[in-house]
Length: 251
Image (cartoon, rainbow, N blue to C red; front, top):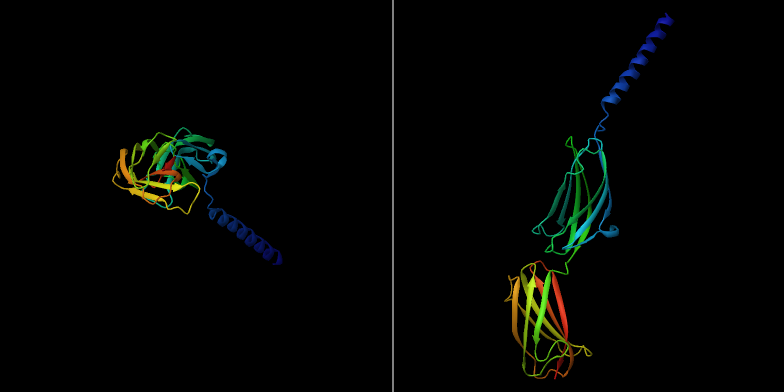
């Protein structure tokens, strides 16, 4: 009798172990196809920066057990949804289990400077998706503006001057990748910051990408004679700006 009971207990224990093992296997939700992405380098020296009008260096290590189908890079502004996104899809890694993703993504010359999010998304041939992201900064292109001043008062470049109590004639050509928003002039004394500045802002060139700037600016009659700096600043519709400056004397 005891022998039969022992056999029964052993059978029950074995059955419990077997069922538990089967249950554990059934509960295993680990996907058979996985994707891992290690974003190694974003920008030169991994500085997380790009410059409008140039390309962004990207490097990532990708492992996809279901084989790579596409790799998509998407860059969007963090704060302004009206700014166009940068999107590029790569299919030249299709069919690989693992790859060193090494690409240069073009940043448009008119892309506004600012802080952006970069998403790198890998999709495998089974439809699984993995996205990694990082913050990057896009710097303004030095080619966004071209400013050529031909006349500021009297004289030539390096020897521009005007007279207190008189208007100065200001002329130049401005070209911009984005539409112009404003053009501002500021004249300040080089050696004495307490001397009042002369300032003017012009919005009548707004919307143009090429402007023949032609204005007259009054120099107050009580403006002290001396050496000044003349600043000419163009700001575009995206908030980018460029300033050129010249030596200017008030006589």
